[in-house]
Image (tube, rainbow, N blue to C red; front, side):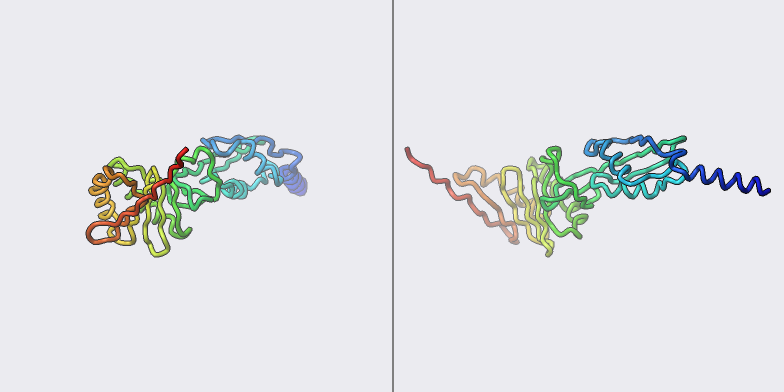
Length: 224
């Protein structure tokens, strides 16, 4: 009995010894175009992983999910010295306050926009209101896009007042109430302004009937 007990302790000591079965390979799976596999390995190897038997896969998962572009990570051991990592990347749908990004769930993640995100719409608002803002933006974008207008930016104030910007720079001030109805009024009425000699800078739709127009200042042309 004493011999079996001693052998058991010896075997456990061997399994715990990182020098016996250290984790030496990290296999990365899943689509992760924003995260080079070498960066993932560098994050994990910044601290000792331990041996195959002692590596904490929950800790590894937390370290991966702390990376800005990682939405979700799954980690499993593969005999004899491998960790298999499966990553789900964030899906950016908008630039948030010019410094972060929104994923498709309306969650802010603090990754710097790259060239791939240059065409994404820009949303501005309170961090705690990002989910509601994205939901409202989608409804406005659908209504405008279905009528040939591309929505490129939106502002939602702390009082839930909307302001939109279309491709080309035209701004639409909607305010807090009846936003979809006001957008529809813009769609119905804006074509009548397009034949004007002046170019509108913004339309203020916060009126029960009609709207106000702000015109762009005429550029002064220098004569030779």
